[in-house]
Image (cartoon, rainbow, N blue to C red):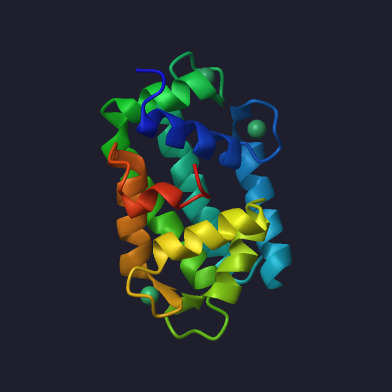
Length: 179
Ligand SMILES: [Ca+2]
Ligand SMILES: [Ca+2]
Ligand SMILES: [Ca+2]
């Protein structure tokens, strides 16, 4: 079980969320993500978009704690994360992720046309600490219709595939960079 595709994807995603690299996910990591995205997109604390993003991450973290923090130490370890997402917590997790995806979309949709350009998405990925080549792979994955923009439907589809599919052909696999 330890080397399934899904397992590797989840490990990759854990590393990405563990923004401060201390080997566990807790509130501090989400605070750091919001801070970085705010700097990237010039959104000061207190603006509606900033509040929406903060709230979406708070809901995600609260849901993660409830469904994944098995030893109740206030943090989600790598093992808890992978085990949680390979079990029945996965569907709930996608429900928490959807509002986060929407808030991120809104946050970085600078011109307000309801979709994000490659340049806007590059800012998100820099904020998340992803390398340029990982961004390129993610953009190829996300922009299903090749329009050069990512809309909410494309993002939702990629998230669904990333967190549920063991299919090596699934495009959502590269959502957070090539595996
Ligand atoms: Ca951490
Ligand atoms: Ca824990
Ligand atoms: Ca598109």
